[in-house]
Image (cartoon, rainbow, N blue to C red):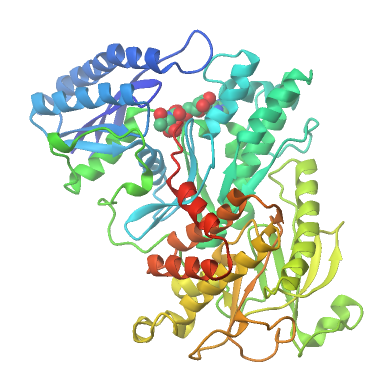
Length: 613
Ligand SMILES: C[C@@H](O)[C@H](NC(=O)OP(=O)(O)OC[C@H]1O[C@@H](n2cnc3c(N)ncnc32)[C@H](O)[C@@H]1O)C(=O)O
Ligand SMILES: [Fe+2]
């Protein structure tokens, strides 16, 4: 199978020929380079109408010279997302070429192509993918015949966030490589090799660092960087600090996604993936947790038609082609709208991973902390004094370990702030009637908390089939929603979040890994719905649902922040659980019992919000 691919979503007019049998790909590209500022949509469209026919002509000539008149078996094109006028030029070119050659037409999602090229090159079977491109930034994982969005930017794409600063400074598009060069100057290294952390690093300006579960935001950091420039800070130092913050955020959420799903493979995609510092951070994070990492060659990271032709060949082989009349372009085409036809029946990216969780989970390494479970007999040694524990429950020592990939100053402040927040909000949540662990001790310099051990397992493990009898499909089918313990747990999470919000704060990271469930294969209503307070905690086999890990929580009365909590929880369910619709409904019902309807309304807005601006 030989496929001619065409790309032209924004700035790069490109054509390629991929020969699937030979495994070879030839790419011809012509980038649009604005004289000043960022991408001007009209100029970009003009560029496409001139450059697309030329690059296609070059590739076609090459194909026919090498393979003869039947050189091309299918034509693939980027349908979206991207700039409408650019996409229309690409679509028209693809339709007429497929017609002239009398071969099938394949419509490719540009973001899925950024992801698949890494999977294709690495040979990984089921990776988490970080797409770091101009107009986008998201984490994707395969689940239930789709690439699900595990996390994404709440505002600008990562490249655009950086380019916003370079426009302010007066640098031309693309800004990313210029920021990389200036940052390397500040770090005093010339060009980075990408494998080492910035131990010798330049001073770090403090900039906003916003991570919510696996979602993140760049709007604050772009403005803060602009303000720092206006205030006279040296531009190299701002570039350095901008990279350190933005890439640490992307690396952190990638690690969270690996932790949530239990996956042990990560691939990188998108134009910002060419940045050595980002690649270095991701490689270091993966090495530290024993995961495999693959960053494709730069010619496959920046926009290019090679990735379109490679995915196009897989889709064409699966019969996933388009009739001309349904081949319209889609400027807002989301990756999770694409039915994945070209992969065999493989399991979900979510699996029972090395992090245990379904039983014998004594020493565990989460995304940011190491958790050590201290048995009853050893507690006095561990804590120094006898702590007042209900029952004879074991305790947990949780230490936020330093992350070598991030700048030491940023690392210190994140670990300190989160340890303090966790201690404070875990207790405040209990006062609001939400089951949480008792906090026995806080050691801020060591970023260590001593906590009560709660629950038997993480909700994440229950949902992805690690929960013993809870995962038994037939047993589950026999239950009504009301008596299904999984449904009861997610409904309880809804109520718990409502109570936190009512008390004026958010959890900040309510993924299914931060919910602990306990006991209770019994029918009837859950026990923690009412007035259990502290009395019941740790006492016997009750059916209870605890929230843990409040490190990303903060006080806020904003409906948007409350809605984000719900969005984060639902994202973690949708991307990893079977029968997720039913669970999401139960969760929202739970929230509705005690929370504000306005928050659920805002949640729908957050969900529908277009990201491609
Ligand atoms: C929708 C589609 O048009 C869009 N594509 C796109 O934005 O081009 P892409 O090639 O994936 O990424 C370009 C971005 O990648 C950044 N970039 C390129 N080299 C970089 C570097 N060394 N460091 C940081 N950013 C870099 C550029 O500044 C620019 O913001 C997308 O994938 O979101
Ligand atoms: Fe792209």
